[in-house]
Structures are given as structure tokens and as C-alpha cells.
Image 1 (cartoon, one colour):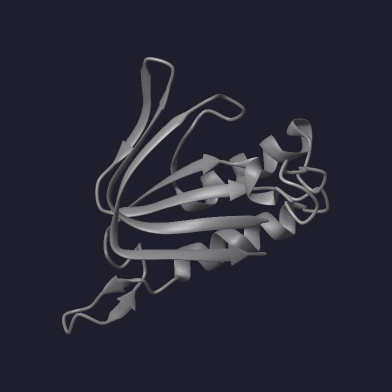
Image 2 (cartoon, rainbow, N blue to C red; image 1 turned 180 degrees about the horizontal axis):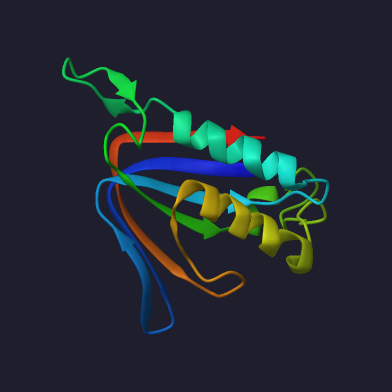
Length: 140
């Protein structure tokens, strides 16, 4: 699994005209599932994200997790994180899991994170205010 994790002041996701989810201070997680991922990968990734110390402590150092900072989490499926552009200009998505494999693992991560979520497989618009900016790539 691969996740782009951004510390945000706020984030939201829309599908068409519907606002699907919205958070204040917390983490926006863009999540992709690899075709070799399983439940163990989902569990490890969720634990890692929850343990990331990217929120400031009293001294202003990044030393607190999202839980310790009372932050919220918004998780959005994003298979394009497995886009391969090494050959040519059109990305290949051969390593991304097919939807029937990816969706249950995406849902498992969301549940473990206690996250609000986007709409799996939908065309979405994601808005965010990156705080810091803090952006990390996390892989299982």
C-alpha cells in the first residue's frame, strides 16, 4: 500500500455536487492499494499513520500523533499513486489492485484510522489547506 499523508488545517472531498466528507485539523490520506497487498499490509499502514509524529508539541516540535493532537482523518482512495511513468508519458497502472481487491482493503484502513472517507471509485474533487506544509509518503 502507498499513502500520501498531508497534515492539513482543513480538507474536504466532493463527488459531483455532493460534499462527501470534511475535516478540520488533521490528516488527509490519499491511499492506493497494490495488487500484492493483503489485510496485514492494511493493518500495518494504518498503525504507521496513526503513530506518525507530525503535529507540534508545546515547544513547536513535530512530536505528537494525530490522536495525541485530537486531529481528524480524511482518507481518499487514489489508485493513481501506483502510476508508472518510466516508459513514455502515459502512466501505466498495472501494479494497482483491481477494485474488487482494493475496496475492502481501503475500507479496512479507513476503519482502523477512524477516518471519514471519500467515495471509492468515484470521480472526486479534493480540497485541502496543507499545514506546514507537511507531506509524507508512507508505504506498507
